Amino acid sequence: MNAICPVTMIPVRAESNERSEMVTQLLFGETFTVLDEKSNWLLISVHLDEYEGWIEKKQALMVSDDFVLKMNSRAAHLLTAKTAVCIRQSDHSPFLILKGSNLPLLKRDIFYLGGEGFVIKDKSRIVPKRFIASRIAHTALDYLNAPYLWGGRSITGIDCSGFVQVVFQACGLQLPRDAAKQIKKGLIIDFIDEVQPGDLAFFDNLQGEIIHVGIILGPGKIIHSSGQVRIDSIDHNGIFRADIQKYTHSLRIIKRLC
Image (cartoon, rainbow, N blue to C red; front, side):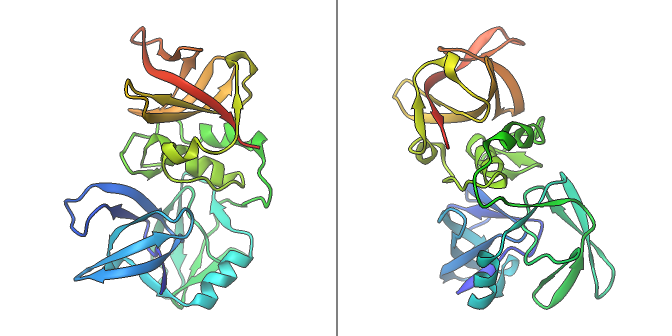
């Protein structure tokens, strides 16, 4: 059974209750498979990255297999503006969506969801069929100063791996949700002075666990979500914050996804 996110954003939780940890988010227009049901909760698998978690049943909109197949067979339209307002055709009421939202089967500024038509005039972009690395830095900068939020994937709150995932998705490459899986992609860059914009830098703790990831903007510069999406310095030791004059993250490895 397939469903879609019909609201601005849905928190996906580790367990089937409102107090459980938010492990990720669904943005408007993202689809998923329902795996199980418990009371007012659904266990889902996100189509984008096969991430599993629980959402409230009342926030899901069931859709047909044919609808999902049509969405997957056509190039996705992702919202590029930080926020946008759609207008419901039935009652002309406004509906807010966020950057990175999927506009299902958009055609001439109109899309349909659950039999309801929506009009949107704000800018969207077709996701390229091939990965365009040159777009990474520009797309990442759109999230600058967005607050950090564990499990977040939106401009209103985003964590380090969620930030990397949504930026690369917009540029034509789907990545896993977590940094520990993202590190398995791409080619190793052996020396810090060989980095290019769009390379990924991964950081570990004293136990060797991957705990952070960021996007290289250029020589000596990285953009990452730590407190907020910010730009800091990076060298062979790790991330150095000039405002507090200390290293905050220890560099493990740099990868290039191409």
